[in-house]
Image 1 (cartoon, rainbow, N blue to C red):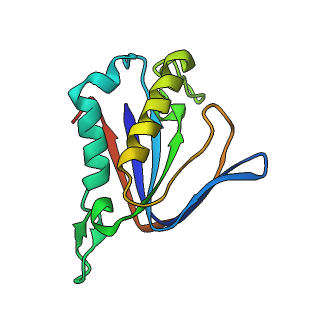
Image 2 (spheres, rainbow, N blue to C red):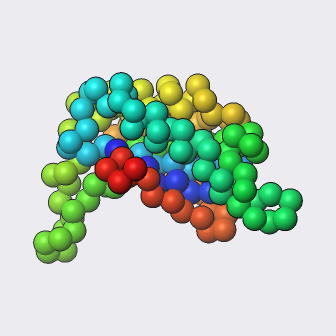
Length: 154
């Protein structure tokens, strides 16, 4: 599992011109699953660690402007988006290969579970896009701050 976490001052997602979700200050989280991820992933310690890390990364400023506060501390929002392209392989040629991405039949239930678990722990507002859809994201990356969490390296 890979998560790209962006600190945002606002974000929204739309499909075919219809806005599905909007958030204010918080995190835009792009989530992808790899071919080694299985349906059992939510029952593993790494699942809990990835979610805990996301909610508690100290990437928001304190009163002195230092990154010392977490999403939980600021009661921030999360916009969670599925993104299989996080597993793009660009080693050969110019067209990315997605053979290391999880098959949608496995990835969709994993993403659904990630939505449920994230929403249950999000201190502020929670929003999401639509799995498998071509989505348009609008956001203001605050900082900019972008963090990559990879289950293989945590």
